[in-house]
Length: 360
Image (cartoon, rainbow, N blue to C red; front, top):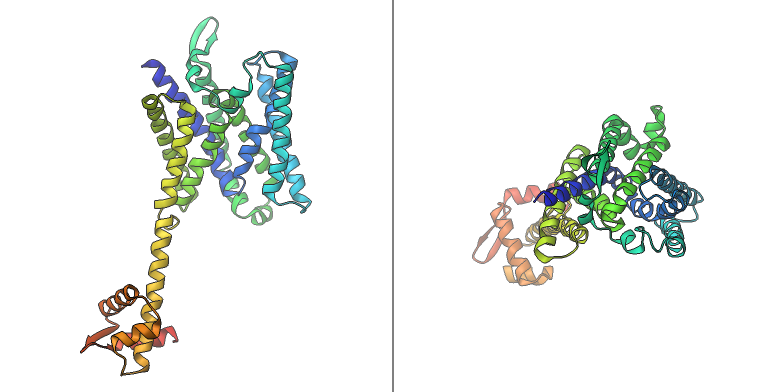
């Protein structure tokens, strides 16, 4: 029971720490940069490990963060040439870095914990057993303290630079006019993203890191219309991903990290379908409503042109299906634009005003 609570707590800390930078990466249209950074930091980790021979050395995080910043700089440089679009530049840089890291692991680090399987998947179930000792006293899982520090760092950055983040995200030109330097905010955000990826790398693996950075933020983007609400919805989505993912992993006896990532994707699909105003169902309903609004105006216009039209003749003239005609006629009568007498449609005063205002 204690192990379960520790695993869930660590997973929640990872999810919240990933969600905060993910929100602003999504709003800036740079969500794929998290994927690039989470893969491109690998050669930095491997190179520093080959120097220190210590997987828990703090220099690994520094080297990985520097590699993440280098990835951002190279990507931005390619974009600045205007020869490539943003997605193409990202797609060129991070596979190069990641493949270099894989080659270094295969050549020099086959026998250590930093193997290819852990790089790709990670396994959070082992996190509670890596205990942090201070002066010989056990202080709980190392990952718990590690991710708490990163979460506090991300929270402090967002709270301190919240106004600057919003201005530079939505209107960089206006931010420069106010005296802000958007590129500094951007590189600080990328640096924190790198640190977050490194911190979560060995706990849940790069796949889950990318899923938790992009998934909750993307779902919140569909459901919320302000940054404040987006942050709240992102945290709710991240929490549900972890809790439901862990429960699913226990029930089905599968990887916890994989289950969390899967649940994250399912929650995004739900948001994509049912989100107000931006969801697929809402858009379908909106398009259907707009079609019938236009159809009612067209029907009233046809009725106003002639007094001899019968209902069947109108359907043939408008080239509508029987269902479309019946629904349109019923809505027009219900709204008071038309009324029916002896199988003939007659335009009301309200319908005439609607035609005039619509400039038919």
